[in-house]
View 1 (cartoon, each protein chain N blue to C red):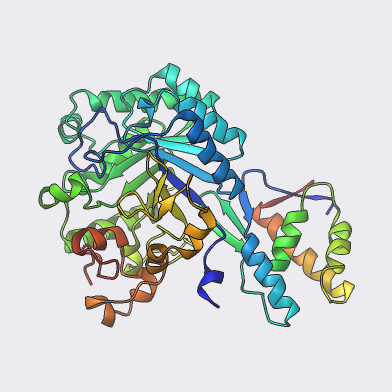
View 2: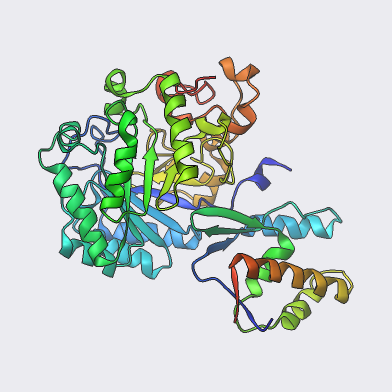
Length: 333
Length: 104
């Protein structure tokens, strides 16, 4: 089977940053220091036309804080009309009951709220925003009241890895049915604060063993991971259609000016969705091809797990070494 | 079994390029059983159907009977009708059990 046959006709998901503007300055943020022109509402509609034509079923707005775009509801509504499934991640600060209802009315399928610690003071300090924990939990309650599905997103780091069970309880308390435990990415401010926030490979292994066991044990809450480095652990069930990072295989990222990158954490532009032919980007980009055909390097070269993990998270390898093919720095093997 | 209907909660897409490649490969006499041509996302989990499965799935619109679907596909594939009907029924029954189809 050749390489072309193995990739899908188009990504399944576009993670879409409408704006890098944010009302928070979180310690781990990949994008807080990014500067980028934003497109008009009309141009964002043109992007949706491209996504619909390519039959890309899912878009997820991230950022930056999506709710800082006044036209978010219009853009989401148009995307929904075009048949796309729309979701977003928010810090929750601007999300009250009226906003929750508007989000539901314009077609959002789910909304994720970021909460990084079950301890209000720790969360507020990490997000450099007093009162943000209370606003975030109120946002979850508003979403639940509106009938819109809510999820909770927590980036696993040194501030929460020992108490993630409490995060699960927090999710339950606010009627959340799915929690995303995102792996820490050393990009942007996350790179600058890496020594204070990132775990050691051995700590990652311990964390994931417990998280996998918990995921297996409980049934009232869906725990989702997105970290290819866990492929070597017992209890890991491979449910993705691809091995290794899904970036560039199942998903792509859109910057506010229409530039496409493999993911939000890899600042390498592979084309512009309004200026370039999408299929040429998807099938012919040398960057995407390199990410889909990683070559085992360093300790991966002699590791039996490489076939399953494909070197782990490509974004982390790239951020720390400048080379897609180097081992994920979180790997404990 | 009346008129099978796709579960509306399942998001799905025909992988057009792969489907075209599979049809070309089939024409050339190669085995295409392992090549996914339709992608389904159900409860956050992705699945793929091969060429024949995908063509059956496309036709499970709640308007066609299994007989209609078999008639449609009989014109596409060089296979004895009884064998095709048996395969289609097994496939549809499997998806009914999984909840991916309902008996419309």
